[in-house]
Length: 299
Image 1 (cartoon, rainbow, N blue to C red):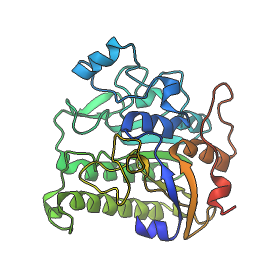
Image 2: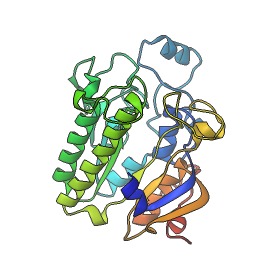
Image 3: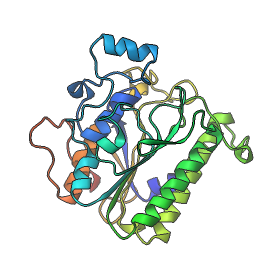
C-alpha cells in the first residue's frame, strides 16, 4: 500500500461518508448522503433484535432498489462488475449486490461479528456459516485474482471490501505473530500482502498501467487501531471517526507521488470515476459528491 501511495495521489484530508459502515458504503456507491436513501443506520440480519427494532421504526432494512449505484452505471456502459467481500447494505431480495448493478458477488452480506456469517456466490450460499475466518483475506484475494484473469479482455469494475480489520480479528497460523503490533498488526500485514498479490495479478494480466486503484476505508478505527492525535473513533463524528486514508494510483491519469491537502469525501468517488470515463451520472436525483479529477491532477 505504501508503494502505491509513493507512486500515486494521497489525499491527506479525506473523510468517509459516515462514521459507521452501512451509511458509509451507501455513500461510496451512490455519491449521495445515506439519509437520502433512508440508510443512516447499520442494518442487521433478518430476525435479529436490532433488525426488528429498525422495522418497527419504519426504517429501511436494505438499500432501496430505486438507488443508482456506480456498479449500475458501469454495468450499463459495458463493464464487468464484481463485488468481492462485505456488502452490508441489506439481505432482502431487491437490495442485494446482484440487484444493485454487480454481475458477480462473492462474500458476506454482513460484518464478520454478525450471525449467521455465511459466504455467498451471487444469491446462493457457497460456504455455510460459520465461515472459517482465518481464511477470509486469502479467499477474497484468490477470488479477486480469478476475476481479474477472467476479465482482462474487457473493461471491469471491482469493489473489493475486506471484512477486516473489523473485529473479531483472525489470521492464518503462518502469519500469526509476524508483525510488531500484535494480532491487529498481523491482520493488517496480511491485508497489505493481499494488495501486493492483486497488483501482481494486474501486471500479469497486462492491465496494471490502465487500471485505477483506489484504497480507503468506510470509517475511522475502533479500539484496536489508532486515530493518532485525533479526537474520536468509529461511530463518532469527531475527526478520528471519519478521517480515513485515501490512495488513488493511476500514473497515466493522476499525479504521481503527490500529497494533496484539500478536503474530500467518499461521496466524491462516483462523480470522479464517471468524470474520468466521460459517462453521465443520474440526472433525476441529488448527487452530493463532486468530481476530484482536476484535484487528482494537481489543478
